[in-house]
Length: 409
Image (cartoon, rainbow, N blue to C red; front, side, top):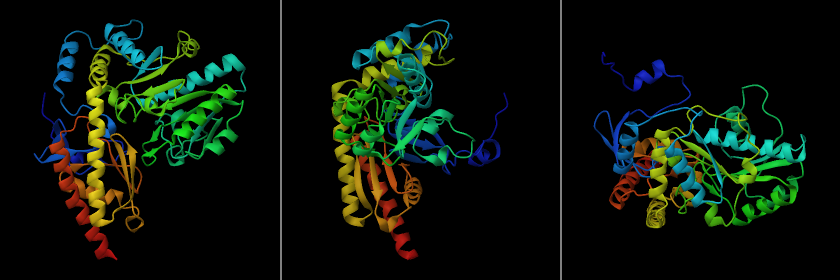
């Protein structure tokens, strides 16, 4: 096979332009470090958007990948396989759920959850009970259904008529939610911490109130834990620390540590409303992905690992506070566990991308959550030495951004 020479410019020539990737091209990673094609190293605080929760190239995951890769990659949904059954058993043993459905992504897990909620309501209460309650600034995926349910209109506009029966309410406003949720509602879908919407944690009273309103009106409560799940907030799923149990939970991102897999978890009674042929997937639950995810679940459910999430969370927040004392860059630092957002002060409004770019120039991979929030979602086992080195680099980047802003005034 002839080698094909590619670089960052090749993206602009051959890829559909729905992304605007960084100027450098990552080539390899180990732990919380990434090297680009030029050999430059970066400290990774993005984790592939809260995905590589065990870092890059984890030896136990590589071992499973090679072992299962030698056995069976894919078989199709006309058959089951041992890895997916073991994974389902681990997840149901760890959670409120009795049943699992596996897909390829968080969007597909949410699509399944929303379809199941409507099917359940129509079966039990009739065709009028279809309303889905969601929240402004929420994000639930990029399928047409999930992007319509998500509370960011910019992602759903320009594609023609949207699915009907969807209502958006202010996040964390319990009074409006209680008033709006009625017997027409089939489901309420909510992120325990809004990720793409700015890293906004839910008030415990808000989630408890949603649970009570759903119970009162016969609606299902769906927790979208695509970003908060699999240890990200310091418990295996965030619902566990809120003391509120959903009817359906969706999970993906960290579940495969980079191998595409998502899941919908629910109770036996609700699951029975999906009959054979009603919903499906070609790749979901394939033995290769399931075997990797099973090892991820085994490793991350370890109480010692979850305890370490809290330690790293405190360290990141302490570094951010220290930087803020020097530069006054942030209005608020918030989040749970290792999903942390730092909202920029008014003097630096809309400069989040500038901070991101300056960080990259100084050898740090970071995320933003909108134009005003810097987002951190690193490996749950990030070495403290890497964490400290990363923040030394971030401080240099912040100094450059603050200086540039001062000059421009």
